[in-house]
Length: 458
Image (cartoon, rainbow, N blue to C red; front, side):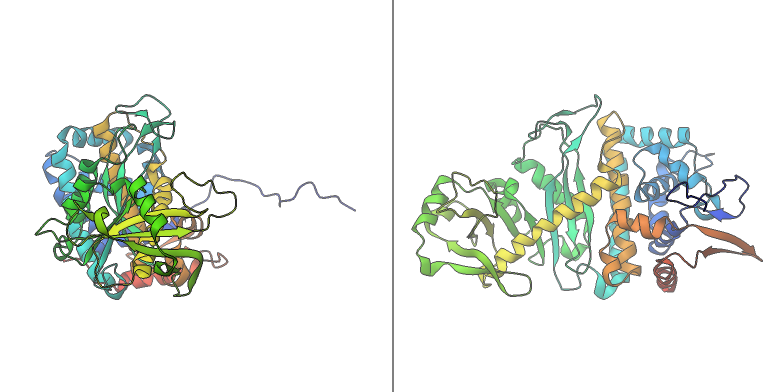
């Protein structure tokens, strides 16, 4: 009997295949760009930086880079995967042209960044209208989560410095709009900072919040319908006062450092004042209680601030801190939301942990490292990363349903974008024929149909 020589079937490899398209599922991103008008908006924004006889439009180059990053690229040269498939992505600029454009935009500095951000804001408003009941503001409130990200540098880059985690690199501060349990999240701010930037720097939190609010539709840039959430890094007098400033009136849910004064007040809370914490389904959270602190602790803070503390049994192996009491892990946050049970407010604040999901998605979408040397160049790269994350949030929101809408970038790449297809030209039409045996072909074709039914941008 003939013995097998391996675990996988033996196949012959040839280089004479024709009309085969790699990464054919990325047509979902291309169609998202077309239906949202992102390419037109970025092209119009970057028109001042287009030379009179230039072959490639700067806006198309930036959007191509964003698509390449959304597909898993982590440097400028990865735009080559688009250049290899002109039938899907059209003409794509050469590597030297791409590098020159990034240098030009970096030299332009704030002017170019503002142009890109204004275009993203206008497109975001249009996308939320297209999404209708699936948009993040469908419930009448927009939640923005602020959080820091450590980006390790493996070579000497401008402004790279030792971080608080004993690594070396940068410490950007980012903002994300939470789509809720039925969706993912989309980036609305990214402030590039040196690695040794402080976590509790109020000026940086204010700058990031300003960038985030500028990305929202006009009606959400002030008022209680916009909630800003962050961890204890934002628990400073200056930042909380800025959020509650008259005329801005933003809602906030900000983590606070458990000081010795808070610790002493927690020890004095009677057992009857503790309320069981709850889970998202409304059931009681086992081993967790919440209480509201009052008195001199909130003196000197903005009017209407509520200070809520939670105690919880630590999970096995967790190390208690000196401020933890009676074997319980103590956490604290401040909010200005009145007339709601403290258990609901604590659950709402706890859900900001979803920001860790958005950060993980950002790391796998161009933020694992900053590929360029100068800070101005890397700030342009951050805008490209945000464009890529926008596409990875908008496409599922507009075209996917069920569990598929919750897929993170890596799963979207493996299941949808990486699908191959045969390109057939008939008459004036080009048709991609996806493999029928691919398990997620139906998801791809159905999503494309949903995108095509959307109105074209005006």
